Image (cartoon, rainbow, N blue to C red; front, side, top):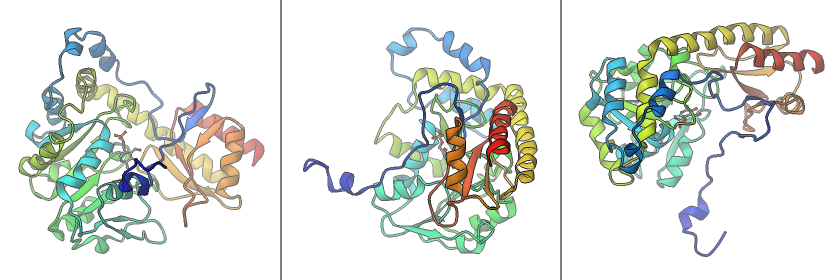
Length: 350
Ligand SMILES: Cc1ncc(COP(=O)(O)O)c(C=O)c1O
């Protein structure tokens, strides 16, 4: 703390990202990264880039990338906004669509960045408790005066909401409804096709998970073109060039490589289904996952115990020390070999 800090900087509690350890040989299953490399076409695009691409400012509107995303999603480039990771897109959404004095509504157990943005922009929140089984109490998301954010599938529970529930939330709200589909490629139906039907819908997506590009920092939003204009206005009032030239090239190439995308996400889903069965046989249970992670607790050992046991054996998983979920571990789905390492530790030491 210093007297030079603003009251805002002194008062906020920043988001704490999962650990990024520097040591090799760790099985890192704590931040929902993809265990496979990105599409080789993304790397080819970076290697083939003209040097002058770096001497000049990049395209401020990421046009070619937005066109590639639009093509793959079956929408128009004017319906796509690109940002420096979906965290940035979410951050820009607050001043673009939410207001002070009208609380932003989201679940009490969800992506822990949502309340952090609210605090940064000095906005209030309205946190709705998830049901006992971690499902979303859908009716409580109707008529939110300040707007709604839903992660689908939710993080860290992994539970997905069906399209009819989202339609009902859209119909019953006059303000913006943000659907964060960071994990949707692993098991939830995307609502991008609904953007022309509901002008209050914004779908947020990332290339960090299903496209294995967490290090490149690319995310996007899809919405009705008129709705989306507010996001461009806010972006151009903060940072005109959120995506660097190489990120734009590599992301466009990765998005277009649908065959590679299908292959790697298929492998992850297959590994998840097998891993859940193995974990159940060891006494773990949890909600059904539609994501590239599972959220499970042991029948008798505490979450802290199991986490430190894994850590002592070079396996890192994430745990949130919060009411109702402190005994759950959020375990990213890695390669079958990584999951076998984790299972081996549990079989030998639990
Ligand atoms: C629900 C959710 N949304 C958004 C993000 C941000 O992803 P990125 O900024 O890498 O696009 C994450 C990352 O963990 C997430 O879990």
